Length: 123
View (cartoon, rainbow, N blue to C red):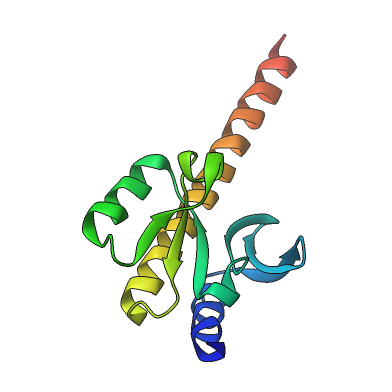
């Protein structure tokens, strides 16, 4: 199992500016202090990915044997479990999707706050 968590960790940290931290005692992976993946279920052979509900539906349709929604409301919001023994290319792609999802949300928030700041300076 350790090698499976090691691969997940290696792939997550290979993403630009990704860092490892911890959340509630479990390793997590962040971009600009926002979590995009965790190993909260690592002892069960699962990684967690922060996806949109639409992205989640796509991976569940493509590989239901490798992905499952996280339990409860988290799963309904897009949090998705991936088997750590999935092929490396699948893990890398899924981590990249989660990473870019979180990064795009940050970029959108920056644009909104910049636009609001510009508007308030104009008034």
